[in-house]
Length: 141
Image (cartoon, rainbow, N blue to C red):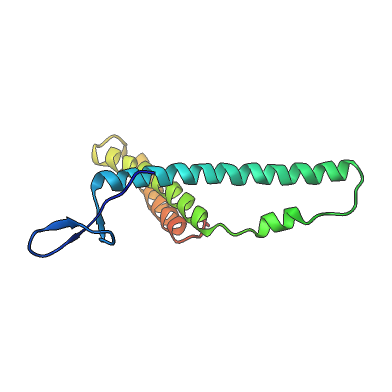
């Protein structure tokens, strides 16, 4: 991870480097966002892998006729990852917003005929609602 310089406005001289400053440079912010995105993608992949291993272990026990369960599946299901879930929901919402933005652009450019405009407008409206639900942590429900 790169060294991120933090800044604060000191009133007279403008922005100055301070250990506990409230601002970072745009380049550092973009770098941190990129690193966060990579970590979130890896974390999601690890969750998926771990789940597949739990299912495979349970299947192996069942195949061998073992009745005793370790409870790994229940522990995995009850595991909470709110930061990962919120981040993945924000990525999903961003994808929906990109799509609805493109649909709005096509409407504005006159690409659709009268019948299609209603469908596209409805899709934009529903997309906005789903994106808002995702951002609120409701998984698009």
